[in-house]
Image (tube, rainbow, N blue to C red):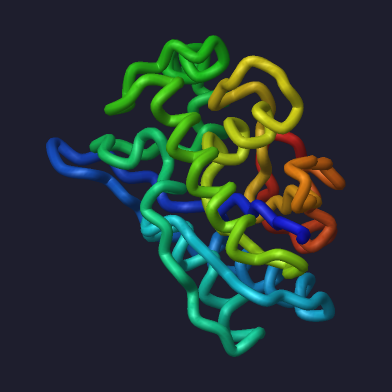
Length: 206
């Protein structure tokens, strides 16, 4: 089967005194999600999954509408900072040299409720369960940068991290999963659908 791990589109900045920030998509993010759906429209998809966080659900919505499918929510592919009271797009952190940017780079940011090992385990178990339920299918999972980092690190056999590379907004990461347990990465950071649109792409694009 082919697994498409898709990072959500650009959310708004949200900083609260208490409670989970869980921001919705910005206007640019909503446009990114439409371009994503247009780009994948010519492909065959058998199922669409998403994190329950707003930015992932809203990114998945145009794709689901294009394929006339429902979106199955999977709690275990929510981001490691799901309960954080703040969400600042990483580009803003980098541009202002915010201390949180360096903490993300060295994997020392403490805005999480679980260890790296616990996070990696829940992500891996959830994604492998999706794979097991879809032999021979093409499946999209709209999730988060940390989730994608963690799973691909496991496939590559490198130390698991939530930040060993930067997935761009609505980037597609393709993995072919065989019934034998073999996993092959086909593409990383596929964002041709945003090129030339004038929309932000992320750290690895304009």
